[in-house]
Length: 296
Image (cartoon, rainbow, N blue to C red):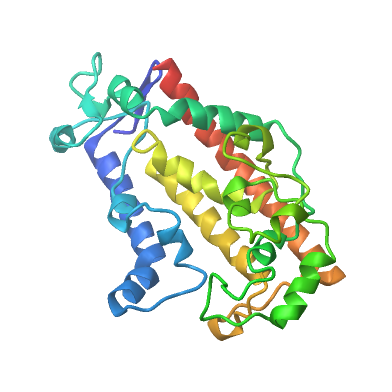
């Protein structure tokens, strides 16, 4: 038996959804193996730790498979899901188990904000000229760098000169809020939390990384495959973010993107364009989830 669709609901036979759950678990296990090993050994990583400290979804939560809104699970094993939050027996499906949409929307007030934010960002053109200078502005004229175990590639004075010789245009509040006090007036924008819907734009690395955050805040309404797609984008962007940063990460195997040079700027913008395209596709899929929640 294959998945059947009735109206807006897709029903998965037990062998189908159990197979999807197993594939998802194997995918997550492969993605998180190095992180879990480092955590067990007390080892820190200046690039990848960010995905588990700034973003707070637990590995066990990522590993748990969810079908998402609009999909119901058939078979005796599906009954165990009724013990989990936001699962219910869905009327009109012959006893199938799926998302409790009313309960989810009542508890997760963030849905409307996420839809508003992602819709606004999707309608804007991508700005690709920031060159990752937000990371440089976070260490401008200070000795208190965020990654104290990692040296600055150009040293203290060289790093400050890069900041002073560029036009900084950071539109993302959660990057801007980490700027040093001397760097804040150098930004052509002054982002705030209240202005996030007005300022976030689809070329921004951090706005695209945050698709992972919005995906797990919408869980379990988001299919777990989409959640992990967003995680993989966030992981890949984080690598560029740090390669283009002022830090020297050669000891960790990361060659720098020298954004203080013309070649480095071109390399950064090409990668940024690719991430903007991947982000646009994932943003549409998250908006489809929001629309399905409204329609259910």
